[in-house]
Image (cartoon, rainbow, N blue to C red; front, side, top):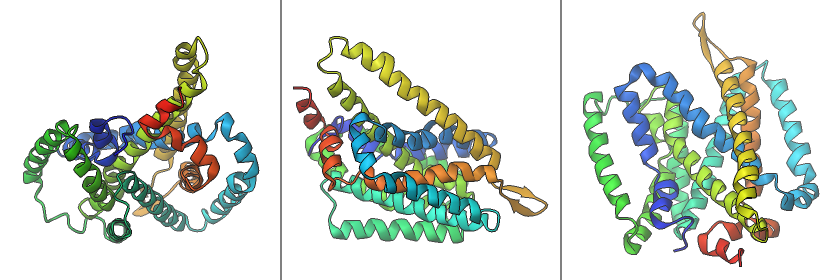
Length: 331
């Protein structure tokens, strides 16, 4: 089994990032007055940074010729779709939201399939399991959010979370063992992908339920993109005597500044436009459409960025995904 970073971190951040929903749910239960701030914090720190990271891996000088070759797919078609969304929004923002949810579900599930393949567990049957469970939870949860909310009593949930967390972190601590690590890679990645949308069945608030489950997707994406970007920068600066200084003082700093301000702006528009109760009706501001358009682009363009059957992607991104492969590029 190839490592992305190392066995323990791969399990914590890629194959089984279950700590995110555990921490999120624990905070929601014990600090209910802070629910809004917890949601905003997760959007700002994880969600929008993960959307911004798409641009950091796409806008690379080695990609310019590839982007130019696929200019229609990368820019013309997305701009057309954006105008279409803007035209439809005044008549039916709900239709745009449902389309967005379904596109997000497809994107998240496709990544789950990809993660399963990284763990050498991407069989047809396992892929089918992920699709069925993921979309069943998503569709049922959107139709009737929190449909199973009465099954687990809130007073016992804390105890369940604490006990589950204890065994989870104990297992993660031992996961540097080869046999245990391989077991976690193969089985936990399947569980993660299958139940990302499970919180929708237990929580009435759709935004919070999605953040709890899809948060694992954000962690996976950020880990992989950050790792690839760091390795690509190291490889491009390897022959420079000031490689470390250039890497961390200029390129990394600029990338982090971009991600910070992108996340700040998109979080602002999300909070400004998020559905609000207005005279017993749901009022959705057009400001909400701005992050939706950029998120839809993220869902769409990721189908190209991670398409390893494409020779350009195979040559310029895949070599930096795994640790041993990336080290060869520094020789």
